[in-house]
Image 1 (cartoon, rainbow, N blue to C red):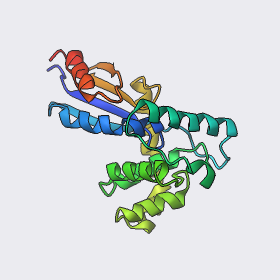
Image 2: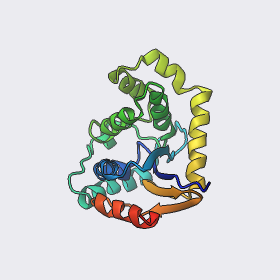
Image 3: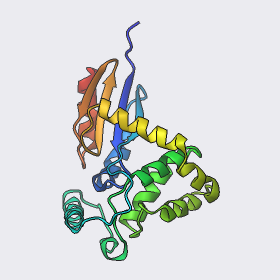
Image 4: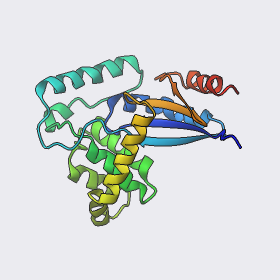
Length: 208
């Protein structure tokens, strides 16, 4: 029997500023999707582990990106004090692992949102383990157990698996949407302010 399963993959990173801007449209799109389409969220891992300070050129680029997002996506806010109050590092794998670890307590989505709020609104650094453990505690996850799992081989293997999935789907940036039906993998254009357009695109791609 031919496999006609329908899956919408959402590739993201909790420290991706465009994913933060996309959040409202993504939440609305999920509410609009028919039950026949399964949603699978994949962590893309923008930047591997690093203890090195972020180069000034990268800091300036990201600060400009935040300003650009605020202008392009109405209602999106950033706390620009982050760049003065924290020591930025180009390291998002810890935040990705925190989401996977929180999933063990069925709190993955809550952790993603907590990381985004801490980073973009509260000027806290999710590249720091102490920040992530504090967020886990705020989500009623035992901080000792969370810390142990955060650096476990199980979590590292799962992150590697999700990174591989993103590559297999042809993801080249975040956020990304890929619709799969059987063996077909179809990219869906991101619309930061128009979830209806993405829904219609899914409908056309599936031929429904």
